[in-house]
Image (cartoon, rainbow, N blue to C red):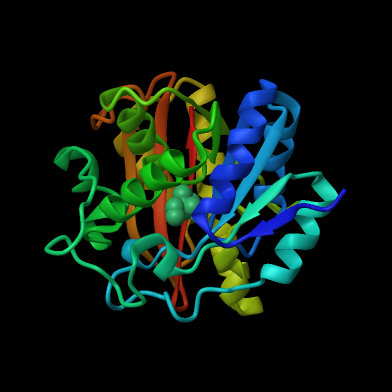
Length: 286
Ligand code: PAF
């Protein structure tokens, strides 16, 4: 059966009301479209554990900075719909910015209510270079939760900081749903799947492979009892291709998000780097 494509909030709510009457559980997979095998894994997981699955496709303007790729971000709704049909998803919710924010232009926090996650969680890693990004993410995700009232929502571990922040939001704001983290999906050669990989030239893609190689080496050193993050950091630096522009390598406790000097179980090792003009992120949890 093919998924129903809905653009407005009222229609989504009507469908959900009918589902709830039947006692169905609802899974939400929030996306910005340009779906790939990573998203497919989230949708499959949602299908396994929920009666009904909604995939939202919305390139959220308020999570993009002024010099970021909002206009260029791939928009492939037809192909996204096909994949959702194949995977048996029930509704694709693809609203316009106007439907979500009542405006076509990008809103700021002087004219719209924003969700602001704790400062120490946003003023680090990706949030350092992407100021306001996580406020935009938390705001849209809370809106999507309010619109779709899911029992479970599925997020990839690739965006580890996003996953941490949203899990915290659910706890702090007493939202009645479960966040389900899903493992990173990689190409055979190790590159973490991302909608932004389509920007990479062959050469840039080859250079970008050094990111997952560095993470893999850190993991194997850790498994051989190397826990000093200085040594692990230096190892990563020696593996990262000289043509990629490193933004950060960070070691954080994935329960508290605090920096760690000694790696241990549940340490998040996160890397952000640019290959050419494309900003890529990847991580592992030891
Ligand atoms: O991870 C993403 O694709 C986006 O940040 C999300 C969660 C769909 C919010 O726009």
